[in-house]
Amino acid sequence: MALYLLYESASGYGLFLAHGIDEIGQNTEAVRNSVVDLNRFGKVVKLEAFNPFESALDALNQCNAVSEGQMTDELRNFLELSLPKVKEGKKPKFSLGVADPKIGSHIYEETKIPCQSNEFILELIRGVRLHFDRFIENLKPGDLEKAQLGLGHSYSRAKVKFNVNRVDNMVIQAIFLLDTLDKDVNSFSMRVREWYSWHFPELVKIVNDNYLYAKLAKYIEDKSELSEDKLEGLVDILGDEDKAKEVIEAAKASMGQDLSPVDLINVKMFAQRVMDLAEYRKKLYDYLVAKMSDIAPNLAALIGEVVGARLISHAGSLTNLAKCPSSTLQILGAEKALFRALKTKGNTPKYGLIFHSSFIGRASAKNKGRMARYLANKCSIASRIDCFSEGSGTSFGDKLREQVEERLDFYDKGVAPRKNIEVMKAAMENAANQGAEMEVENGSEPSSKKSKKKKSKENGEAKTDDKENAVANGDATETKSGKKKKKRALEEESEKENGKENGTEKKKKKKSKDVVMEDVPAVSEGKKKKKKKSAAE
Image (tube, rainbow, N blue to C red; front, side, top):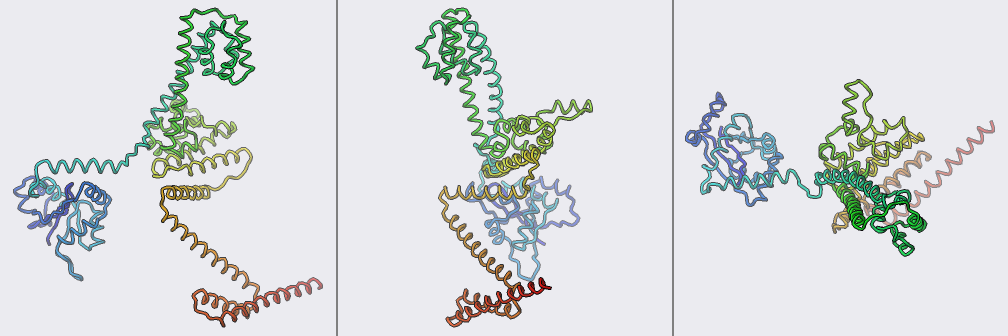
């Protein structure tokens, strides 16, 4: 039996004929040693046919299909043209050796070409791969390496499905910087308060907000120059006229010491830096919200952008967070307390980073652990949807948040929540509607027309079902003769829908309907008489 070898290279498909080989009794180790020598291997294996790829895109498509175990049309045509034709009803006198059993089974299902894949075949294909550049004529040195490099890059890029808008590393860096800025702005604001309080100590008790205090310190500068002329500016900063007047009155009777112009300039410059940091912190928060809506919209809708970003940062990536079970996600961020509890055989922590969620704070003390476990479960679902789904909607996150709200009501008021299957069905419907709206916005009118046709068909089927149900309910109150007439009426209705009846049949149908309608009240009257007799007895 002849043995053919299929080799998928970066430049095209190659078909080799291995003649003079008896597989029975062959030692794999001996074949492995003889494959290295081109003189011995070239006498056994010959190039039968070669089909080059048309372009780099065609090579990528063929590589993707082969990696998934699928036979493309190009490969099928190549095999049917190059291999001997198999007559119907007869066994083929050859077999095809392939490297992947999946594609071999698919080739056999489609073309009935017998395929085999074992260690012996793999060693022969290894030899073909080793000496492939010698088999192909007019192949310049370095061309095969360039094709392999280009195809490898494009294949890896397609497999990873790199999306610039969904890089979770940006979220990790943003949340780290946000936490650092919170600490720095807080410490710098305290320094501004302490520094300017030597000059105007009464201002600390009037203004509590750090950003407003720095803004006022820059605006007021020397308290002795503060008068009614600056009232409008103070009102613009504070937003309250009474507080502005209070600041002016306090400046008149202030116990603080005077500062030199140089000291006031330094205080003013430092207050400006604190204001810039606070404004940059706001912009960074807006950036984080926008990135979370692209990367993990459902997780952000469920638990909030900041807490969701902290979970992603602590896990290392969104993929790592999606791989975590809900029990791990529940105590993520409380590792020290967990291992200390395991070491001392104490109580393990109930929550970690998800404690910062508003749901945990709203739950009562006895239900905080339950709420944390339930919330971790929903966060795990949301992170997996965000990680592995191609869409970027918030329908699942919104529904999961509703479930958590219902669970809170169940713990506090005893209101029974909805079942999970009902909520997920509603979420899937919302996601489908959002996808349809996106298609309509992009100008895909044919799909909308198809959906309208489907809806009209479904409505028509529903109407016919309603008619049949109504007929079935009416049969229960009819007599045997009424049932026969009803069947005739149904048959005439079906003939009318098919366009087979004429005008006389329409008249018959009307008469039969009248008869049926007369029979029903007769039956009901008989029932009423029976009830009256039983009541009299």
